[in-house]
Image (cartoon, rainbow, N blue to C red; front, side, top):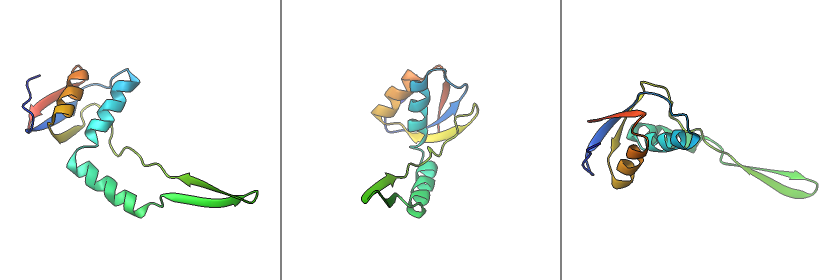
Length: 102
């Protein structure tokens, strides 16, 4: 994979990886798409992030988690800025993605 750092690339998922670590890597990469990141920030502003309640005279709390906001389906495309860490991660899942210049 010959990607210049600092360029924009389009990443298309060709098949779903079998390894859980590879799926997690792809979800982390796809969350860097500016459209997805903007939508996640919008959702996070509306979502209550901290719940507190009293149980047995003590305060208990729960911090909300957010969905990844990306779909790991074959054929889904995301546009990313190719930084060094992105290039390294794309090389690790190269058998599952197709990378083209944006």
